[in-house]
Image 1 (tube, one colour):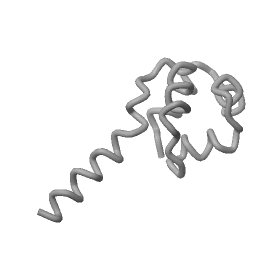
Image 2 (cartoon, helix red, strand yellow; image 1 turned 30 degrees about the vertical axis):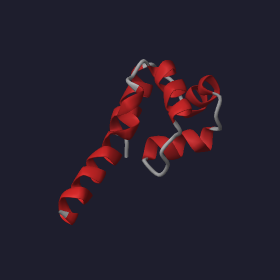
Image 3 (cartoon, one colour; image 1 turned 180 degrees about the horizontal axis):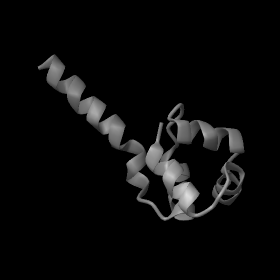
Length: 75
């Protein structure tokens, strides 16, 4: 779950549908992104970030941390 994303959306008083419409994606896809089931492309991350005034790199922080942990386990 991307709690930070849900918080940003709620702060703006936007529904899933409103964010999705403004970002140019389907509501279901936005819901999957917010729940953490999907990771958006860089373009979509930037679109959503523009709508919600958040840093687009936040979408990829957990992936970077997982990659670093996996590299340490292999070493």
